[in-house]
Length: 573
Image (cartoon, rainbow, N blue to C red; front, side, top):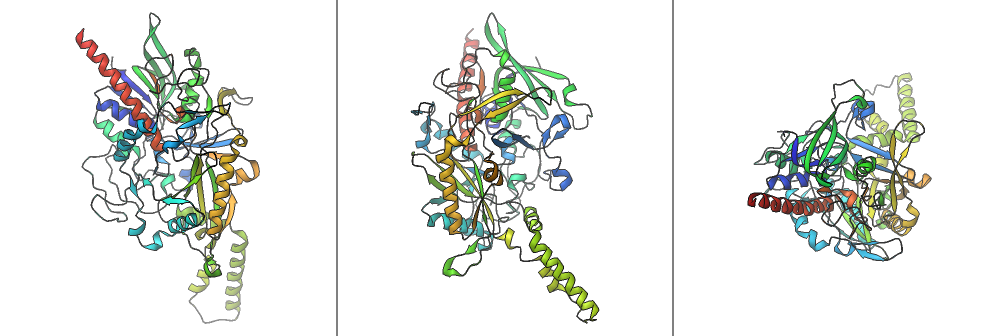
């Protein structure tokens, strides 16, 4: 059967891409179904017209990269595209601390995760090698290019935090060479885009997609290697349903139905023809929101699934705040502290935070593209109006008095201003171990046909996490000589924006504790696996991408072992 595979993987993020490569390396016939499109270097939108359509809603013929969800008490931002979340994440590769591998139950007791740090350690090692992580070369670049990193690290140390440069999935230098900006990246293997790449240009555009190929996104490593091994990668293939194939009341495989989007097709996505593939092993890796949505929507085909489906949702303690108009507080000079947040990768430095409960979190500096600095300056209406009126008044005065001075460069420079607001301000990103007590469900809309994902989650029960992170960020900002400002959604509406949604299909010791076992297999459904952030039993407490990838590799090893065992049995017969 040409449409039958030994493994079908839904999604190509940190779970799906790692899984595909490992299974293919073991000789299995594998297919990836990715709903989004491929993004080779140079294809990430930058113009206002392109960015306005860079969102995911096929019903409105939007096939872009950003998929933004708004729930009752939180927002979530995820990605759609070949490479999943790696396209828009901030490149950080941090392992979950070993002492945090436990979770708090509803009765207040702590139980260990079904997997340990020791079990994941070899997988952490292999993923780090594959993603070619490098540390930000703080001491090998001119100081003018490392201002925000140095300022954040110095302030964090002053408030008693341990800081370090984490591994980043970014190529700053070719192997054996010093860091060079925009140098060609040397590679013996071609990537699936067959496109040239350059070392990091320090442009701060990581979260918007790297147009220079400097980010070691999954399409440049795991997915390229998987394709060379024969993995069938289908983009714009959105899975709609899946169900078990049974023979004498035993599951012998799975049927997966999907639609093939076409950028040139004018028909509504609801009218697209369903295609169907079958497989021996089905691995859901559509991300926390995607996997929960698919399982809840297809719940009728899985009546024996754990009643824990949808429970244990976490925002990973994500908290966004800002340091505004920092000044040099040394010697009480009060001079503007130039940070240049657009120079460098988005994140360069991490500071560890400890909670009284024994767990903790991390705070990181954040950069953004240069075009956002222009938007910040344009938004400063009061300062802009003053400079504009002064420029116009001076020009009229000179014209009326027939002033012979014809060079007006200094006046134009004053018109543009000092750009202090954008150059002395910095976003701060924080993550921590919040309570994984949210509930994911489906709800019908009163205004639109169909059912939609809904999450009931409240940050009140995680007050220790968010209060500690907020308090620490405020202390760091004070040491930077800036004004601490909360994310407006959090400040005025008590809403959290998460870019790391986790849980809903949590891993548990048994079916009463979770949806999947420690090997990633769904309880009561043989050869149905989940390998993404949805299986995290609790918050990771730091950037979760590396842990998700390590967990996926752990699950892949179990699938491979089972596959080899079955193959051996078939040979014996």
